Amino acid sequence: MAASAGAASRRTIGQLIQQGWNEIPEILATTGVALVGIGLATIGCYNYVKNDGDNKRYKSTYVILRPDDPRVKLIKKE
Image (cartoon, rainbow, N blue to C red):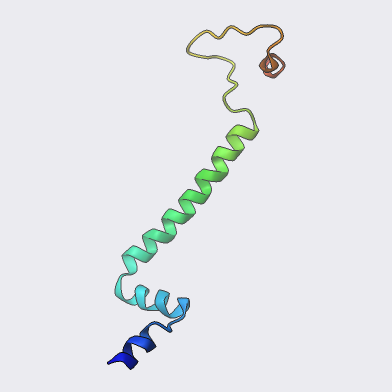
């Protein structure tokens, strides 16, 4: 009995994924889709911040900036 427990703990990651795919494919497939979604969301948020996505030409509220504010140079002059 102890030998079978020791053999079960020596499985590789590939064997565990293969067994999981045979037993619960829905969980493994949705986990993969979720990881891809988290990766795409991270890239999207990074690009939004990098390209100054919050600097919109038309805002829903007024924003008053002083001339010495560093955000003044980022104002779009379209």
